[in-house]
Image (tube, rainbow, N blue to C red):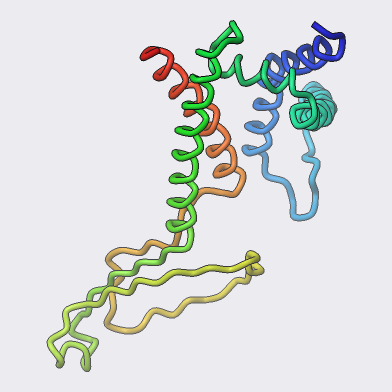
Length: 211
């Protein structure tokens, strides 16, 4: 084993074993409300402020290490093979391992593609079901009890947030309203990342059980 591969493996182990500190910081920051334009919260406790600073410094170092590790994954073939074998739960490098990794990668890619297509379609889907009351004279006179509106919204950039007062038409009651997935971008990206990792491990074990 080369010295560079040993160093890269140590970096990978550091990223894995110290990831709970990063998760702790992310969860902690999600429960802290800061004023608009102020990225650093104010703590009354010195201990809490000290812990926040330590976690923040470690988070920056962890991100730099993660960037380095990803770059090495692209250009260092031995590390890439080692990581794939570790993710699949394999040790020996033989034809059976290559077969398992190939089938698992293909199945994982197809499942991830299907999931991303579903997220793309559902993120812009808009469905609105309304019911007319007696106050809506023209629609009731035509014998209509309600309406169903289905549309799709696709934009390259998120529109700026504006406080608009939505006025509901008189005589209409919204029964069902769907305007896309309620999850944030960070949550969707994290879910896709976990799906890619877990699906690869699942299909690798499934193929290994048949071989």
